[in-house]
Image: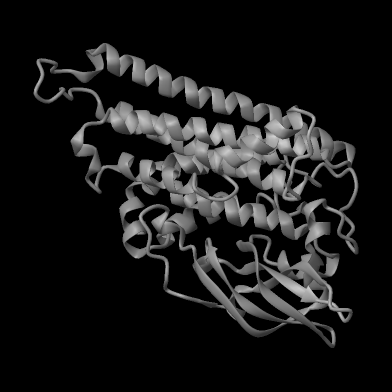
Length: 391
């Protein structure tokens, strides 16, 4: 099981990497994928071992500790944090698969796993497993992943359909060069495609079972403190990205403001203007509020995992609402700081503009949209059903 020393070691290494992650931001955008130096730094820090079970040489960090690390990465580079969030949360998802699959996936001790949750593929039963076909868009981190989760529809002999999650080696998929975007450019969220790929039976599970950690043929079931609800786990780590980006943007703003005047006015030092003071205070409070709110869902999810039970559907809906609201607070903080930065902020060499564009883009993700998540939370607070199975 993880120790405080494990967390401290990872955090120290990540913090020392933040200047490099920031400086590499422009290069990442230009090549539409993270610089190898970023990946090497995180590999050496142990980031990709955070969610790997201890029995395979991993750190097996609890969710709250993983979130701290992801937020720190977000201070340095939004795109690197987003890719890390996907890889680490997907690595945890792999711990829900049968022991045989876990042994194969976690053999190296450090692993990068991408995921595509839209069921745009199909699987057909064959001897010993399934044949997978399909394409998955927005497959974040696919250029540098070792494995990939692919959602697919399985047609049963009786004509019924069921969604499954198949995990396959990334080298068995083709990755298109089609990631041309204005935000999250360095995340490499390209389209991956499978053509008649054989997937062993133990690499495929029912989506319904994965969602509630009810998968079988594995030894790490029950009250291990790590059987979180899938979507709540992902949402918690996603919120950590937003909070980290906002913290990074705040630091970058404070670095730029000394000595800056307000053009076409008599103000020669922007920090002396009352409006700037109000803007900085408002942004800081939004970030602090988002971080304080995160303690609520992180505590709840850990309590349930320690007890070996899943959060209720109402609790999961509230987690979605709270994480969505925290992400919105973080986005608003970055918007305030960006708007207070003057025209020069739009230069590509200014890191703050990239933090602004990336957080805007990430907030459009289907799971991060504030209104959708707040609706779910509001429904259960009013005594209604959540209105979705994606909890």
